[in-house]
Length: 141
Image (cartoon, rainbow, N blue to C red):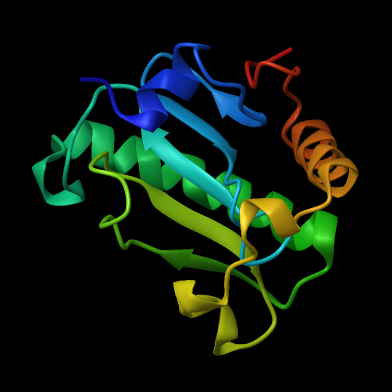
C-alpha cells in the first residue's frame, strides 16, 4: 500500500509543493512547527533514510539546503532547521523549517492540521516557490 507521501506525490491527496523533480519532491507538512515547514521526500518509497542509495540521499540534501536558504530569506529566521525523524510515515523524509531557537527540534511542538491557517499555508508555499523559481507544481518554471 502506498504511503501518504506517495499519494501526495501522485496527486491522490492535495499537497503544497515547493520543489519537484524526478527524484525528489518537497511539500509543506500539514502539521508544521512553523509556517514554511517543508518535507523533502524521495519520489521512490524508501522507508529509512539509511536505506536510500547515496545519490538519492545526496540529492535530497542538496534540495534540503536550497529550501533551507529560501526559508531563511523568506521567513527571516535565524536558521533553517533540519531534522530526520521518520517514525510517523514509513517513507524517508527530511524536515526543513524556520528556526530561531531549539524549540522546533521537538516535533512535540507542531501545530495540528486543524490549527493551521490555510491562507498562511498557501502564502508560505507561494513565497517559497517564488524564492526557488518553481511553479505551483514545484517544477522549475
